[in-house]
Every structure is written in structure tokens, then in C-alpha cells.
Image (tube, rainbow, N blue to C red; front, top):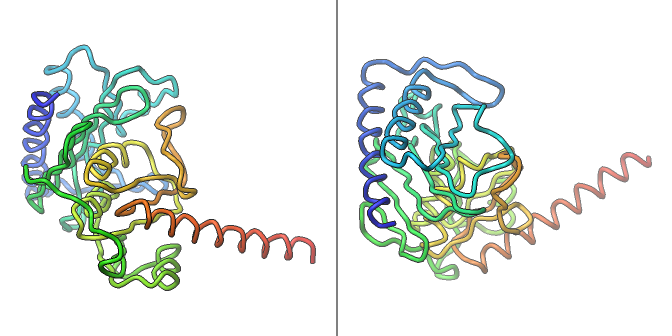
Length: 272
């Protein structure tokens, strides 16, 4: 597994160099497909990863964000789950918050993961039962209680559910960042303490960084605070990434109370 991780890290770094070169050469044209921005570079990155992974590990299937024909709910027992560019909007618009990421999945869990942010010079890696690393140096989450929690999201200031959380649990600061995978890794390395979303997210957004966060001491769960299943459909609604169990309990309880209040208001309006 360590040899596999080293080889995958090399592949992801090579793709990162290509992404920076493609952006310099203007390969940033994209169009919106629903809530997803798709660029020419997404497909080129997919083709590169698919070729390299298949050449290195012919027996392991690859499931990619960029190939809908692979999104079969009947998943193989072992497979690569890849997001060639997570944070395409950042890539296209000249921001640094994009990554390329991949996880080796066995059963319903990631057992090896790499998240590489080429414009930031950061490479996060993890193996099951081994410490998480950033640029080959061990990382860990912060100890909640030593500071008011730092919130991270992808807007210049908190919006939506993140705004409400920021105001209501007494956050001590806010960080703007790009891709979902990168934000989870920023919780893993202690830059931030909490990341929350109540919109659709997909398994390739989560799995590589999930393992990194878990091996750094943090938690990634559904909005209800339960384990992410990684089976069946690849899309789910919402996530909580937290520095530790105590913070997870606090945020998931806050969200439960918020949901009950919203349901109560909705029922009163319906019965009025």
C-alpha cells in the first residue's frame, strides 16, 4: 500500500504540473451544467488519470466524475474513485483553490487517498491506519477548546447555513477556500476547524479528503452526524467536516435543532 501511495502521489503531482501549464496556456474555457462548471481541462485531466491508473493497476476499475457511464450504483469491491479537477471554477477563474484527487476504495471506505493542490504547492496523503501527511509531514486537527472554532467555506464571507452556524455557535474566524476536497484538508491540517454544506455533494468530492481528515484526527459525516455510506447513488445532500468528535456533536445537534425549527415553521404555515 505504501508503494501504491507513492506511485499515486507521483501521478497526481504530474497532473498538477499539467494543470498549471494548461491554465497558463488559456485552457480555461468552461460551461455550466446545472450547478457544475465543466471545462475542457476536466476532460483532459480525466484522460490523463485514466491512462496512468490503468497502466499502473490494470486490474482495478476506475470511477471518475467525468464519465457518467461509470456511475453505476453496483460498485465493484475495489476501485479508484477520482475527481480530476475539484474546484473547476477556481481553476478557470485564476484562483488557487483547486485540486486533483483520488482514493482507492475497498468495500464502502477509502483506504488510500491523495489530494494535490498544485497552485498552493500542497499534497495531502493518507493510508488506512497510518498518519495523514501534507508534503510528507504529519498533520493533525486542532484540539477544540483551545480557540473558538474557525469556519471555512468557498465564499468571501459566510453564506447560507455557514452564515447561520458562524453566528450561532460563536465561531472565532472565517477562511475562504476553493474546492470541497481542499476545505476538508484544511480542517485536517488545523487551518480550520469546521466546514458545513447543505447542498448536493458527491462521493468523488469527499472520499480522498475523508481518509486524510480521519487519519489526522477529524470527522467527516452527513449533516445528521452519521457515517458516510459510499454505496448506492454517488450523490448525497450535505456534510459536516469537523476537527474532532466534540465539535461534530455540537454542530450536528445545532443542525438538528435548526431543522426541527424549520419544519415547525413550515407546518404552521401549511396549517394556517
